[in-house]
Length: 265
Image (cartoon, rainbow, N blue to C red; front, side):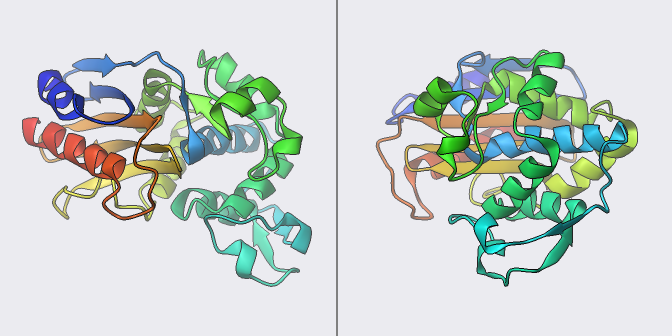
C-alpha cells in the first residue's frame, strides 16, 4: 500500500505527507509523518477537542449561549459572516459549524470561549507538541506564536500527530467516551467531499476535516470501510497548483491516494 501511495506522489509538484493506520490490524506507516505542515482548517479538530475537554471539566456547557456581533464576522469559509448580528447560537452550534462548514467566524467564537492558548496546552499534554492553533482566523494580530504564524499560517501539525489524535477519538478515549462519540458525529457531517471522500463508494462513511489555503490542501479522517476502519491523513504544501478549481492537483492527488488505500483494504 505504501509503495502504491509513493508512486502516486512521486510526480506531484509540492510536498506531501501521509499517515495511515488500520484500526483493525494495527498496521501503520507514514511518509514525512513527523514533518510539520501548515494545518489550515484541519487544526479545528484540535480546537474541538479542547472545547469538549473544557465541557468535561465543567468550565463550559455545550448549551452556553453565544451572540454574534458584526465585529465577530470574518471572511472565507462559513455562513455566519452573512447572517444578522444579534443571532444567538450555542457552543454546540458553533462547534458544528466550525467542522461541518469550516466556518471561520464560528471558529473564532469558539476560541473566544475556550481561550486562544488553551488548545496548544492541551495538545502538549496529549504529547502532540507540534499541533497548535496560532491565532484567530483572519486575525493574525492575535497570534500567540508569531514565528509559527509567519511560517505555517493559522495552525500547524504533523501527519502522525493528527492521525494519533483522530485515533483517540475513534477509540473513544479522547476526553471521554461520550465526548468522543459526539465529536465523531460532528466529523461525519463535514460537507467537503473533494478529497478523501471524493472517489469512495457512497456507503462508506468518513469522519474527517479538510483544510485549504492557496499552497496547501489537506484532509484527515477516519474511514469506516466494510473490511476495516482506518485513519488516513494526507497533507500537501508548497503546491505549484494554487487554483481553487475542483480539479486542483492536490485535491485530486489526495482523492487518488484515498482510493488506492481503500482498494488495498
